[in-house]
Length: 346
Image (cartoon, rainbow, N blue to C red; front, top):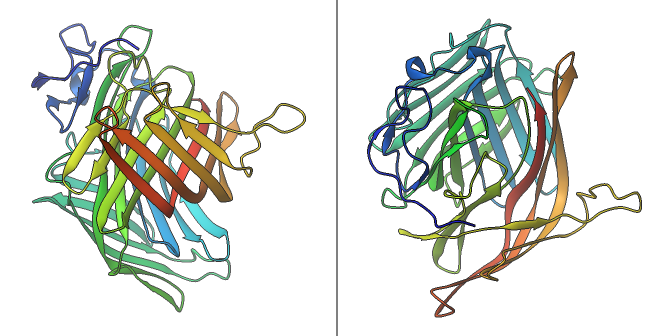
């Protein structure tokens, strides 16, 4: 991997509609504007994705605008019973009408259709998440969500600006780990309190994507052995030679990592066997994580020219990060997070 480049401030895109600078940062140093994009408008992808959970339950909420369609989705996870339940709705040919904010720091992201309403509001380092979804459950139960996420990392986040190997195509992404959760979600009569040891991550993405791609991503936000520990690990998000997205967060410290390797077991036919134990490592040996899957959330679809195969695996992580040339070791013990492999033609 080439030397990692730290981003400066200024516009994200130059006059040609390409990235003005390629690299990583710890905050949104670059200014994104959909109006500055020169690429095919149907290749523009914008999304806000939140995952919040503890060792027993979790919930994920998404609002996105993929230009040819938008999407609102929610998934409720039960780790004890190794199950999940999800719903999604969408509209065709939105092409930016969802009006997602140009920054994650402020503004509202809203989806409303009939009795369904999902709303994300960001202000003063806190994120308010509200959702009312009638007929969400298997027996028609209503889902209600009221949560607040508060940043704990002292402003340290993961940010990358990466190009694809095609003019005017790029990815601008921020991940905010270790956000402390308060509030609840309620499905029918099942009430889940998130005020104790629940943490969340925001995946904020804006960009112009190529038609076909595959990415790998792992995220964890948890409290372990007296410390808030979280990470963002992944690859496949464009040309990452100058901007890997691998970072470890420990309390208010952040550690930049170079590469990561997801060793996903294969079955007898050579296909990925997501339910066998994974090993996540790096070339330098500074990442050594064992991942024991609990279940796989299979998502996506296949409609005419659009195809998505999503294998998001939830399970238990244990292992260590070796930092500062071996002078510092950060361990994680049996904490729930996720790792995924996603293939898209979109």
